[in-house]
Image (cartoon, rainbow, N blue to C red; front, top):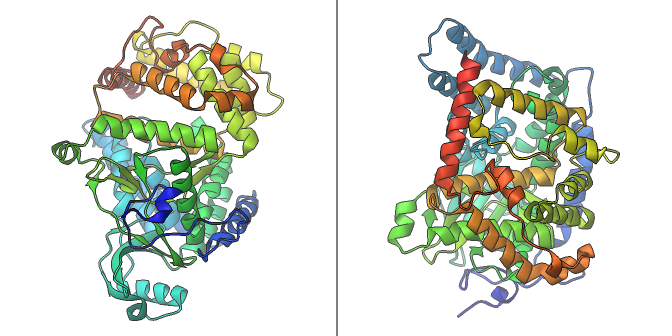
Length: 536
């Protein structure tokens, strides 16, 4: 029998309990922790300016530990590199990636979380770095069970044996902020218990203060920092991580996302049910689900799962959540979802959720609309309204300086020197205009990078241009009337123009199809030319 909460949320048909729909007055109803979420979220946002404020004096002894650990990781690699100890660039990058990952694990949760973000940046960061930091997703050293017991009993106010009939001492996974254990409640329900590391909240806040102090010294000094403003990146990271430090916010996010998916009629995703009472700041008890690891392509296909549909579901739900409701899961990666035998995808870990206010949601909508109609000026205005450009930016000058008003140049026709020069030119121009990456846009782009990698594994022969065209038309049919009313435009009179999309892929407007496999071959050629030029 289908549980009653499936009438308003994207939960499984059967489950260990049913949640009552939270009333519109935000009282939370029978869900004990729900009324606190909005106030906790506001308090977390208000804390960020203090944690990231510029400092003249180093914030305590933690600075010494951080700097010494990073130096200890980098100096041996630099020494070996200068003496030609690495046979290839790939070997060199693999070694520094390993050293940075180990340094992150030694420094603890904050730096491990940075590693997790990097691990989701396939195509954005070197593959060796991505591969190494994937180990930070669920291969982080776990807290001893005695520590876990203390946290659970302290937060739930009861002995472990009084709440659970069994509790696995070995965690299913351990990551930066928390680890998860399989358990069975005294009432017989199989659950997963997410337990926060005991000192993580204090350590994260201290580390953010250290990062805020170090960031100004990194401007222009390291390759990754050269792509953006390090102090702004610290602020962005702080906005993201502080909301992960209270599991009551995460449980509320689970309900919000499940409700949004149901409202959208999205049948491809499910959310595990959080327990209506067993959720505290450091403990989250939820329904246990199981399925295929997102990388288990063979297992999915053997079970008859349509892997193309899995990818399509991810693309559509991300767009709809952001553009229609202004809410979307903000941390998609292989450790945060798996595929059920029936083909639906289970979403996990809701510590990071993108939330767009009314004005920014409409700006984001205009940005996506401009991409499918090739409206360059509209896209730049939307970027400004999203906060990616200062309010007084001369948009015509940006378009001119970035050469967005000129025909697309196929990057595969450029030499390595020309490619590096072009990247430097664009980055310099953006920084000159004070460009920054708002939190919500960063989360969306990071998710798109994950979906990009998912296509490589699950649907490498998918025609990207055709798929984007289909999704755009579906989106217009399903939401066009509502969104046109919100934007004050006649969507029926608008026509799909894929030239802008093609330009984003770096292909000519006459290109009729582009599979992911073909796109990846182009990227590898471009990256090789750039690496070869830099290595000279």
